[in-house]
Length: 268
Image 1: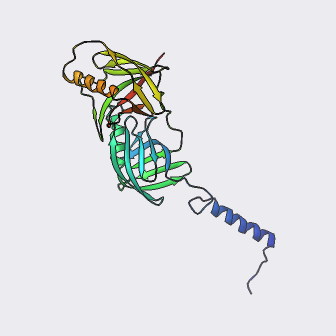
Image 2 (image 1 turned 60 degrees about the horizontal axis):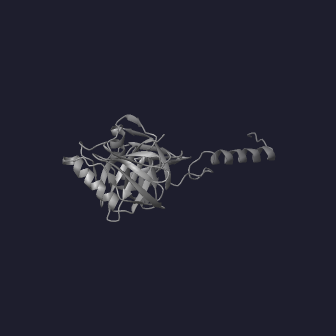
Image 3 (image 1 turned 90 degrees about the vertical axis):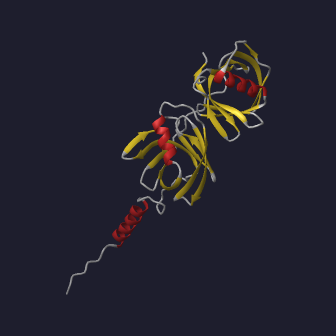
């Protein structure tokens, strides 16, 4: 006859409890961990593509809502339409983007290339990874995004002109020349690209209204002159709606025309 040993009841219960705890600690959606909802604000940390890892600028981020994504490639802002398949995948249709000339253009281009089409979603505690069909990834975390630059006491450099849904960078001849600053009491001053100007603005929530511009009177021809005339007309089309995302300011007139500007430096 074979031998038979009785296992003490207490030991059997302890063993069963240990097995339950082990199963629960293995994670996944069936475990005790609460995995994040993909919808929310994410800081982009890195991209992996073509066997390389590209580390993200501090301002790279992605905000996912039910049907729309907004974010920053690291320098330029963007929008996209999104359609979720539960929490396992999302399909991205790219939308408009700003067109600022950026130092880290390689990361920007790769991010834009990866963030489109159908992407699978891998969730972890405080982390989200989007994966393309070829295995490239966008790795993100819930660390706080780079704070928005202040509207006032910041020198803004005009980068792009907006007309409805289209956006175009300033011509090379005018790039970096149009700048302005708003003081604490909304006194505006700067350059329209050729002539210097000053004006008193007033604020009401997300709107700015510029009073008449006082300018110098140099003759401005070519692309620089065209930019100057466009900016003069824009400031006169007040009230302008303003929005800041990271280091990018957008001013939009009621007719859909506007500009984007980048924060250069805080005023002393």
